[in-house]
Image (tube, rainbow, N blue to C red; front, top):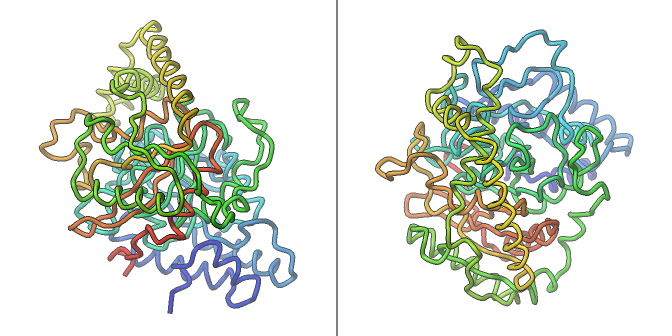
Length: 474
């Protein structure tokens, strides 16, 4: 029998409606799973069992009255520790952040506020590298988050705690952030679904120091749960003046289109960005099978390369490292010494860029955005590997012996679409020879989040995901 903490949010809600089980029973199961798995994976910064059980009891009373508060009433949710969750500090993985007076931490981030309004049960905060600066999850303050499929490997990052939590059954939903791949990288490494929405689709406050590279997105067991979460977290919030669309969308309803789900979609498949990226053979084979599955479902698949013959990494570095420099700018010499040494290096590099350097990077970004817009005049979706390989050793920024200087060296399929602000999702599509998850990435034109979710859901329905639970889930 499937344990309660292994059910999707959609199945939990159905069970609440029929009184097959209650939010309190589910919360207890999830908290027990966290207690068992946390010493192995290290996915959480803080777990608030007392508060979670109190929220679950309130939800149970609402369901017994037949008056659920919203779309996720009683569903356990965790929140990446870069986003405000009232009732506790947001430490951002750094010793430079002062937990301070509890009265100072009484505001929710916009997406968190929407989830609270819809009755979510918050289990706690998940790990992040210091200020979310890199593609793996380890920090001076909270140590290393490991992969649920192999504790010797990384969970990825920077939303690695959220990905690991969802993978082991520590709640079916988690809220992550993505500035260069930060929901998709750990989503791929940990075998879960993750979506980076179109920039501005999900409101964000406080504004990220990484500017319009930073997105907030759902991390979940499958695309159906993510669509449900999107219906909640895309609600308007006046604190984000850059929110792109205040008109509600019904993402969950958009999934159910039967044979029309992907039939006729024009899909471009790029295996390696024109040979520029070295992809591990087992990853390439798994992604190819996912592409063939889309074709069997009626999509018109064509091998085609996006306008990425030249790697935009230097432009990304200019924008990203400048953001890091802005993060640490208020810190005095003593607090700077508390930072991870690699983060200090990146901050120094970012602080050396001029305004003209920054604007030149913006020009590169705008040109790439225009070219991708033109590309999507021909193709509805672009499909690539999410990652060129599977999870490598834990505690390292780059794979041993790779020759890469920074995390962007091994994430060539992710950060370009933060530059262009497009929706991009990772869908698990199998395991490699070591039993490590592989992800396929679906990229849509700006504002086609619903299309990306629909195609991902069709892949799930067709059996693309290898339903092998991680050993850490026990």
